[in-house]
Image (cartoon, rainbow, N blue to C red; front, side):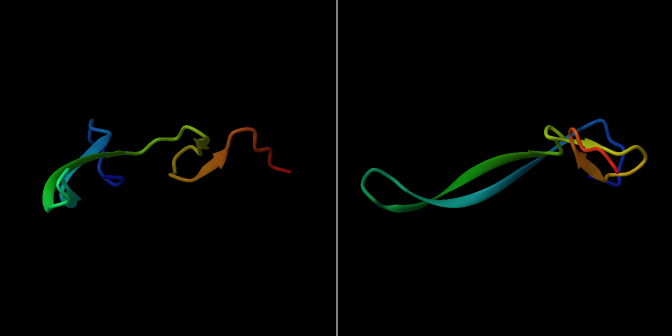
Length: 59
């Protein structure tokens, strides 16, 4: 995902998890998760994937 330049910015993963119903029987259930790269609290340096916190000043 990081090395490829695709227009999609997320990955969808399907997995099975173990859950209990209202009668406390153990069952397995499909679960979907969407992962994405976000830079909400950090800023990315140009030409790399390194990040610094917002407001960081180099001395």
